[in-house]
Image (cartoon, rainbow, N blue to C red; front, side, top):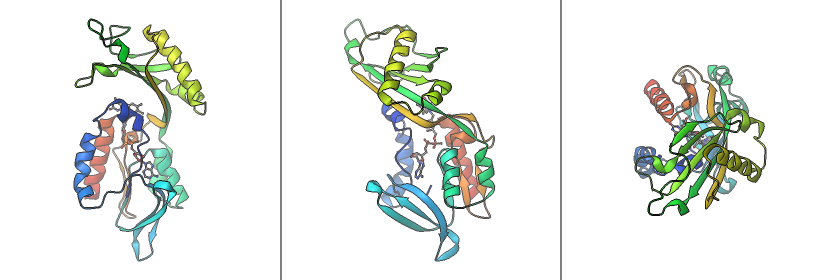
Length: 253
Ligand SMILES: Cc1cc2nc3c(=O)[nH]c(=O)nc-3n(C[C@H](O)[C@H](O)[C@H](O)COP(=O)(O)OP(=O)(O)OC[C@H]3O[C@@H](n4cnc5c(N)ncnc54)[C@H](O)[C@@H]3O)c2cc1C
């Protein structure tokens, strides 16, 4: 997008510090050139009044400050399909993108992050099970991973727990504290870890896991200069986001 906002998946980065290092390095030349704008939400896309074939975007910066950035040849939407479609609709824009975006389905995910610093003692570096990651058939939990087992991570016992798409959807509007209590209980049932975590944080991602992907790497309407990319084009992983963004960039170039 012309402007990037606060990550909807921020908690993922908190759980995995350094995962955004690559993106930061790539963005560095833009930052140095004063052309990188963050913490800014695009609220509307419209034709540039000074150039009928160009675009301008209306944004809300920090503190909801309204801003307008103009003079763009193209607008590339690098956000989940649902808000991308909502942005096109709010902007009263119609292109082949609208119909394609409407076919994508992305499930929400409640995620619990836990840390047990008390587990780090001589002779006791892990709590609970002798495995580091698992798909779960528990009705609340779909996936768990021991973050501290990943290469290069601190040895402090940390877990990320992802609720199932169905349970997340059913409890999407529940209070965060209530969701955390339920996921903590489920975590104890799956892992046998009943110790009280020193740190627990629960985040909700409205658009977390692609259930119905676009089935092609990107969308690009060259006649209007509108494009879209994201993991949802091909799947739900970082590699999918990477390939999608790269393919869109190649199509535009
Ligand atoms: C809990 C969780 C754990 C995960 N773990 C892994 C993992 O271990 N390995 C893996 O490969 N993948 C993992 N993923 C998936 C991975 O995070 C995604 O595949 C990847 O982040 C998708 O990148 P993206 O650029 O398509 O979208 P996003 O990362 O969602 O980026 C979209 C960006 O657009 C911004 N935005 C949205 N609307 C606007 C707007 N109107 N104006 C301006 N900016 C806007 C958002 O703030 C966000 O920064 C995980 C996802 C979750 C939710």
